[in-house]
Structures are given as structure tokens and as C-alpha cells.
Length: 323
Image (cartoon, rainbow, N blue to C red; front, side):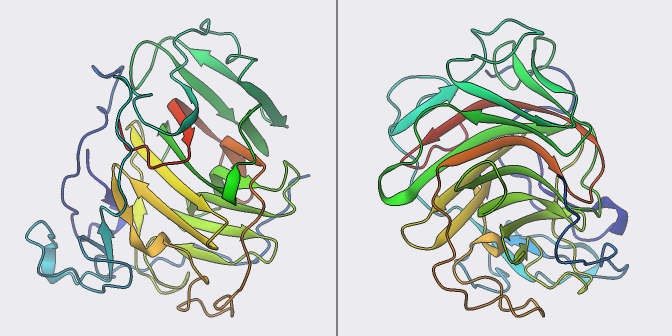
């Protein structure tokens, strides 16, 4: 599987990363506000250069010495990916094979067409159709969770485990969408004080690329590493393809990090928010929420309805990795 720039621009091709699934079928492994920033349009422009290459560390600009970094048509890389962080030693085999886990579910014990395990999960719906176990499509095994993101919110929320000591935890999930990332704004994963949207960190898409977003205040960092109207494309998930998404919500250090398929997305490494944004969001201090609630699914602000599948969902106090 590859991390792809938005195909609309037909620009730089990113290096192939470790596969986490195929494009079709089961793999062999087991009160809705508008976007508060009021930013209109996709901000994407034809003729932009490739935004991402492999390697380097946070803040490294080109990654040009990495032999795996590729760019067609003389594209110039403007941001980097890196491995970053240590994955915990396995305590067993399979998708739940990591140390430090306090919740892991491959949904194999649930009944297809029924709800996820009610001892582990609460289903949180606001004007969306529903969440149910799906026995026809999975990243591993036979089952996944199908999310019908037709309205404002369709989230799974863990019943136990949060908050954690030091206000710091990792979340890993394999996700797949029936549709591409659009220019609107929607969220796959959020974590915060509670389920009421009053103080939370979100990971989703905006302007056709992966992004992170904080509420209240609405600061945002895009995977292009640039401002919303810069025209540089970022990381865009292809439809009908499994991706492994991992997030470190580190409230103790006022920090967040994001990995896709075990590659860190360095423009989404949040400390004091993006100095390249024009709206003055940089140099924010003590911004992290108290992470007492997590939602996994789909929350739509100015985005489009979507159908998504989630599998092998894990939360822990150490790096989990794409097992």
C-alpha cells in the first residue's frame, strides 16, 4: 500500500510503505457546528510540488538524501515522514500483540450485524445511521466495525481505561473508507475531556489531506506542512484501502504525534501548533485536553457523508505499531 498525494493533482509519487491490506475484500492478515475557522475552498492548486518524502526528523525540510524519496516531474519535497518512536515488545501474536495495552478489540467475538462488545464500547450517534459489526470485510480475521457516517457523529467510545496516568496514551486502528478525502472537514479519531466537543484533539481530514485540529480555538496542522491556501497537497487516503493510523495523545508534554503504516507524519507532530499558519495559532501553551474520552468513527463538520470500516483497535501506554 502507498501513501498517496491527492490524485487530482497528478504530482509526486510517494515511496511504497509496508502494506497493511489490499484494495478489495478481506485481507489475509488478521449540534453540529460548521468548521469554526470559516475557511472556504480546498486551497489546492494545480502545479504544486510534492509535499512529502521519507526520513529525517521533525522539522527536517527536504529528506532529499533518502534513497527511497521519489518525486516525478522535478517535484520538490516540502515535508517529511519518519519512523519515530519504539514499538512495544509483543506479549502475544496477532493485532493485540503489544505491551502496555489497556484495551484491544479485533471484533472477532462479536456477532455480525450486531453491536460491538457492549462491555467494551459505547455507541455515540448524533443524526448518523449507525455502527455495527460487519462480517463481510475485515483487516484481519473475519469481522470489522462498519460506520455509517451519514450525519454529524458516529463514534465508538471505550467504556474503561481512561483517563490514564500522566495523561498520555497511544491509539492504533486500521481504517478504510468507501470514498476519498474531500475538501471539507471531518474527523476519524478524537480525544478530549468528554464527548461534548468542548476541549479535544481531532485527527481527520481537511482540504483533501490528513490533518490534526484542536478545539476550542480551531488551530490546525495539515499533512502538507503548509497553510490551508498554500496549494501544497498532503497525505490523502485512497478509497477502498486499509490504512494503519496511530496517534500519541501526550497531554503530559503538550504534544501529539501521528503515524500511518508505521511511518511518522512529521508535519502532524504538534507541540505549539503550526508556525506556518497565517491565523496566529503558533506558540500556544498548555493546550492539551485532559484525555478522559475517545471517539473512533466519523464526525462530519463541513465534509461529506462516508462509510468506513475500523478493525484491530487498540489503546495502550506504549507504542503499539501496525501489527
